[in-house]
Image 1 (cartoon, rainbow, N blue to C red):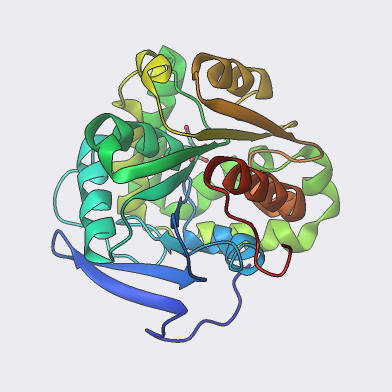
Image 2: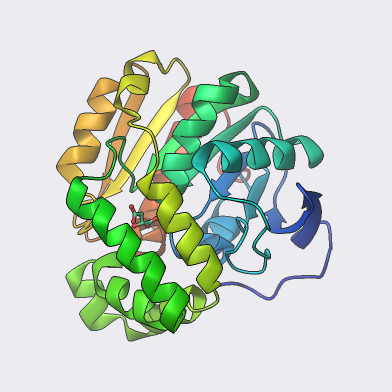
Length: 285
Ligand code: MLT
């Protein structure tokens, strides 16, 4: 999923201290507005490898590991969406990436909507990928508690094995064993503490539905047609509630649409950049 990265190079893996935690991120490309890619749960920045490769000619791309995920250590304090939004804001400030287009995948989308409520003035646009605005149902909230407990007691593996078949479209899961293995290995890097804290943060997240009609920035809602975690119809309805949104359905893709169909996914982002900001992929003018 990830190309070999240079250590602390101009393009590649880098580190910045945010709220006393060394946040690790990958960076590629150049241009504005920068595209900040925030991973889902229990993933990390590795999930954006096809975007760092395929969209580097479009703009500056930045993909951080949130605290407790990938190579960023868990922080000592509590984890809530609003605190993560403040950490993300500080991160963007420290690396001079504001105003950005904030792209959040699933949990990253919950965070993007929380960020929008606090710091919309630091954004140029939003990409809501494989995500939803509604809060957890009572059943989902109960499952968060179970996930947190399972991670604390038995580590990341049982959580990862439970989630893996739901993250990909059924055909991808059956036919693309290389991708399945890559996603598994990547998710197993998540710290049990990160899984537990993020589960409870997702459980406690605000209902973002009232935010949707207030969004004034260019917004792309992008979703796999076969997403088993967030049904595509729900994402389409979310897009209809955002006055400025365009909706892109990615065929033959599940929850990890950007990994399953990277070319279609990247093409949708290119269209969004061109129509919203007049920015085109270099070499395609
Ligand atoms: C994710 O991909 O981030 C998760 O599926 C989000 C969730 O569990 O609600």
